[in-house]
Length: 429
Image (cartoon, rainbow, N blue to C red; front, side, top):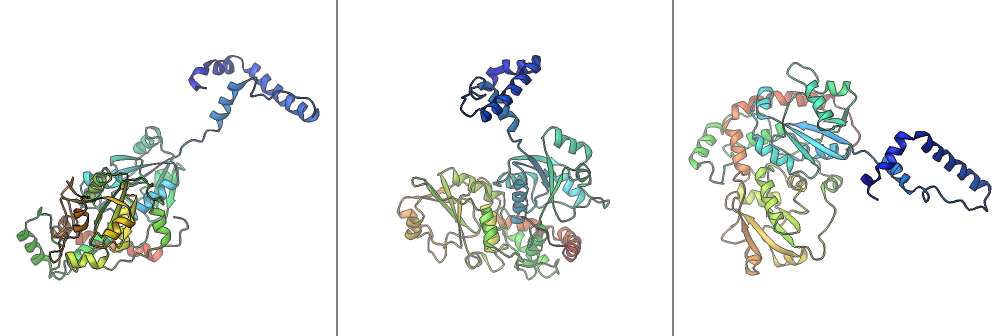
């Protein structure tokens, strides 16, 4: 029965409260008499008054909890993704605020990724329901009231690591005072500072990642390499402190396979330093079928194809970054470089796709074509890459402005060292 068609019930409760109270009292007495005189049959309340079930449903309908989490989300990684996954688990709907370029510059220095790229990354996460662009870095009283009233936010979420404003005050003090603050566990082993350090470290001996997407001239890349290669950079490295667990992979996975008649689309690559270009090409690939399977090259393959300074992120880090994307259904961790007949049969692949923008000459190795089999079967297709951003082009932004990022990393490294020295075990996640 349509709820809107029963206005007379609401009007009855409003104008004749005593009558409805009498009905409820009579129902209670009937219930007692029925239990006492077991042999007497008395109609239940819902048969003579079927519309009263509406009140019960309305009263017991669970309110959906909306939670809010903000951040810069620069050089987005699986740590960001895991934070948002934890935040979503504290409610039913997750709203994410992405801090503006201007506020990041004022508080932390220039971001590596622009607002458009950061929005694409956050919007592409499977746990995000809504995004607020150009959110303030500090949650002021006005913005907090806007969150509560306009966006219907119930709780504001942040990690267990301290977030201090330039004046040393807690950025979430107002939310805590209002009793609308909840905390999640920080993901260990990775941070944007750590990733910047890996990129700067890779340029120490003149092995800086070169942009292979033709967006940076080779001569310019050589100049950058020669200028900064011999200089001492901020402490960093390609050794990841990430400790992969099966539980974390399960948390990021959909846990569902393709239906028997699904059109399975396969795309592969390194997916190093997951960026907006990856999000958009995965979105495009997903539109060609019902189930998107992503093959992620092992570290050795990436190094062989692109140089020993790659990958910047190890296999498990890259796998989590891809798994967090809302357009991805399943990944092959350590996929072979060549797409074989056995792979196609095993995973019931209907179409193999490849983007127009890729790093270096990753589609050829010694003249061998990794897509020869799907091409011969007529199930290979090149799709237009929506963005020309690559891992190398992102790395070049950092190397080209190395002095700024070295200074910023030195400051951040000190605060992170203090955090790890004082941190205690936090349950959950």
